[in-house]
Image 1 (cartoon, rainbow, N blue to C red):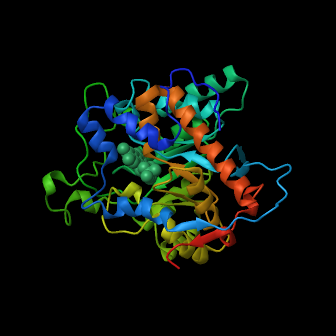
Image 2 (cartoon, rainbow, N blue to C red):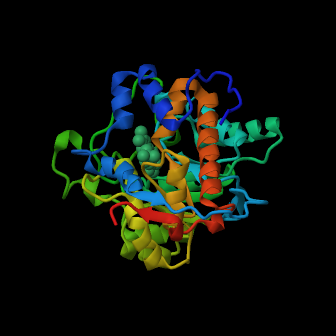
Length: 371
Ligand SMILES: Cc1cc2nc3c(=O)[nH]c(=O)nc-3n(C[C@H](O)[C@H](O)[C@H](O)COP(=O)(O)O)c2cc1C
């Protein structure tokens, strides 16, 4: 397939894997390690890719593909494809334009973006840049969701939610799987948690120096179910919970009023040894019925990965590290090109499978290599 030229994108990049390979040369070694690494032995990180490799396809012959497309509606907003950009902390680590480059790419490709609490630009700056880019291109503003890390003081968490509401964010994503995680990178000068400036108590999630956890403020202020109920009562925006893997937890979150779930193991970065989100999708779908949309992330790198996730019960997938790779290589053009590549792969896979629409994708189109 010949792709249109993308100014600023180096020649020879035709897949997200190519972006990953090219990115290393654009990043400081410690930033590269920070983006790529998983927790512990990286077993869960590896599973995120291995889980996709265990599935193959059973294509229908001579299917009618007329009038097909990849569009879907999520929480009242039309998405061009079942693909969103996952929340990523500190995107200025990869490129000076950081989140602004990503949101401009999201606007150009009409793709949803989940903006992190730990963004290196403020959530207002990101929303404004998205709106301006969309207006310049004559397109609707991209759907923006705000990812919330609960802060030790509820007033601070609420202030973030109110700012997101005021800036036109269309959903809140509460991440629940990263309250306690391995120590992160020491931020270089000029990269900071822009949304948290001025807060007197910020939730630091890293275990300091491998020290004890239980009985310390780190564990004592970790979010609990009552915090989810509180958040639900405080906002009318759709509320998604990100970072659950178990059907029981997922059903309880829906019972608390969650409007959607993002099944995720945080890119294999928190608890080593947990299964991949892809492997847990079926059980979560069974436990929650069709009550809320299920999204997933972890290891999505090709269009066929997207099809597999949808066949196993996801409504849409999110893309994590590839954003940073494309951003490092070619800024906004790189991220836009990466989204374009994934979408063209998705369409090719759907057409080859005999699925003209997302509704036609089901587990009947999958083949388990391991039986
Ligand atoms: C460098 C990095 C930063 C991340 N920052 C956040 C974050 O701020 N909030 C969050 O909910 N998840 C964060 N995640 C997890 C991603 O949202 C996503 O769940 C994960 O990267 C998906 O896996 P993938 O990288 O294999 O696509 C981060 C992941 C990475 C690699």
